[in-house]
Length: 173
Image (cartoon, rainbow, N blue to C red):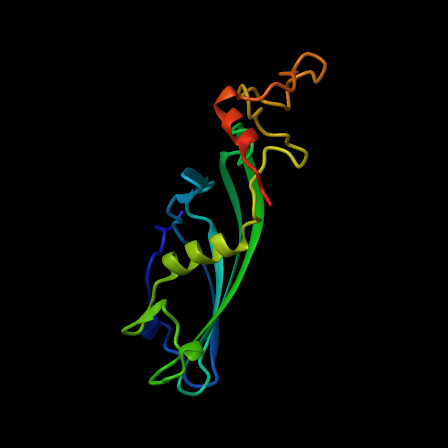
């Protein structure tokens, strides 16, 4: 397998205005930190497809790749995995004052494809990574996984924590 790419020298593409190229290359993805938990890509350097074209005055990029992430479930902390398709586009028009036409991933004729792939993956993630779609999470009283608990045997009653008893005396108008 070729060495993973982090930065791509755009001058080596040798694109004239109106031309484009399609590249497939491995790009290393740094671990993802979400909600204090770490999620890892498997493989660590998925093969991405980069389409680069040269409209007048700059570059247009299209990045696509599948990624498999593994880490803890966001509800019960059991192992979870997710498959997503990343699809991202960037434009970089040299000398443009318009922020929308200036890519933060292009500096000095180099595309930081590693950082872009990482950020694009974060944006493609669902709001929660779960071990299964119907994950019930952890019991807020004892911390037991509610996925494995028998509801008939997992009852803490309706008694309140005595530390909250002072709130019963509050008069809200």
